[in-house]
Each structure stands twice: as C-alpha cells, then as structure tokens.
Image (cartoon, rainbow, N blue to C red; front, side, top):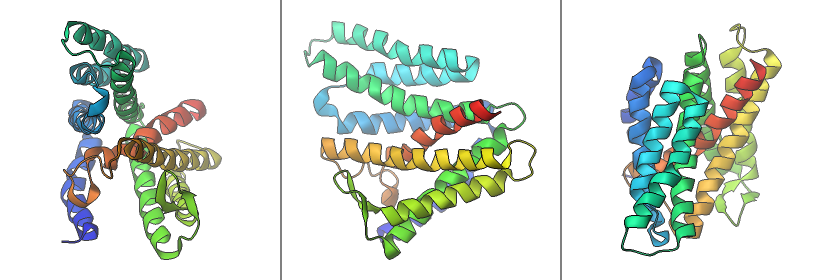
Amino acid sequence: MSAFWSRIVVALVLLPGVLGLVWLGGWWLFGAAVAAGLLALHELYTMARGLRPVVIGGYVGLVLALLGTELGGVPWLLAGVLSTLAVSFLVFGFSDARPSATAAMGTTLLGVAWVGGGLACLLLVRDIPEQGRLAIFTVLLAVFADDTAAYFVGRAIGRHRLAPTISPGKSVEGFVAGTLAAVAVAFFALYEQGYLETWESLVLGGAVALAAAAGDLFESALKRDLGRKDSGRLLAGHGGVLDRLDALLWAGPAAYVVLLAVS
C-alpha cells in the first residue's frame, strides 16, 4: 500500500474515535491527551537518545502538566512543567551515567514544554465555558484544512520553497493555500454563532494557520538536526504520533492566547 493510501486508512480508523473523545471532553479527553503525549514524548526522546534525556523525569512532568491543567488551569500547568526540572535533577543525581547535564535536562524540559504544554493548551480551549466544544472543533478543523490544502496545492503547483534548509518539501504556494483554508474554516465555523465577531474569527484562523506551519517546521528542524525523517512508524503513512501532533502543538497555544485576548 502506498504512503498516500496508508495515510487515508489510518485517518479513517482513528479519526472517529479521536473526535468522539474531543466531543466528550473532560477526563475522557485528558486520558487521550496523556496517551498521545507519552507516545509523542517517547518518540522525541528516542530520536534524541544521544543527548541522554531523563526519560522518567519527562514522563512525570508531562503527566503532571496535563493533570494540573485539568484540575487547576494555567497555574498548575506551569507547576507541572516546572516539576520536570526537579524530578529530572533527582533522577540525574542518583544515576551512575554522567552525560552532559545541560543537554540531558534541556532536552527533557523541551519535550515536556513542547508536547505537554501544547496538549495542555488544547485542553484549556476545550474547557472554555459554554463555547469550548465549538472552539476546539474549530481549531482541529482549521489545522486539518490547513494541512490538507497545503499538501495538495503544494504537490500540484508548488514551485517556491518555503524553508529549503529546514523542510525542502514545503512550498510558499502550499503555505498560502493552507492559510486561506484555515481562515475560511474559522470564519464559517464561527459565523453568527454568538461567540466571536467576524474579525476575531479571522484573527483566530490566521493565528492557527501561522502557528500550525511554524509547528510543522519546528519539528522538521529538530528531525533534521537529529538525523531522522519521521519521528516513528506507529501511524504507517503518517509517520509517528509526534508527526501528527506537530502542528497542533503550536496551534493549540496560539488559539488559546487569541481566544483569551478577544473573549
């Protein structure tokens, strides 16, 4: 089976369950976020094994960050992320191995802040009173539309490289198409819903599009630096879990900040 059709099959199998958990929200979505976050973090730490990340510290920090978010919002999210340093230093101090402390703890904290923080912001969007379900589905659909439009337009007419030293396959034409698609989704999803003004929905769509593209390029830069093409093979044609989450891990925080600012 080609990579293209593998992507389609995996999406058809997983998407209904994921959307169902997002619809339910609460502890159901929290459980899904923990599972996805641990898998993504495992992939990152596997790619960066040469830097000797403190894996246990990262896992504990991610779970505490998501648990803190679910129980207490942003202040406890921050407490969970910062706990990574304490746990990592404790594990590092009792370990017989002596890798670079800066590289080990820096990589560990990067994973928790990036993966845990990004997923936590998606939980915060879902927990917005009364409008959380509408907001999170808008963000997810905008990112999906962005990724789909950028992929197909880039393949069809992409001629100008967006970031050739980081990700040669991405084009300016695909980026523009993806941005327009994300803005359109945000506009039509929120039009006359009594939640955001028209200009606010356009700002949200633009922020999500820019953040999604940046998140994709961010992971590409890390993979290039670590000498990897995909973060894993768990999702067949999609690569690894981190490959599927990369755009959302930046789009979630961007969406939450915009919604916090305008609502």
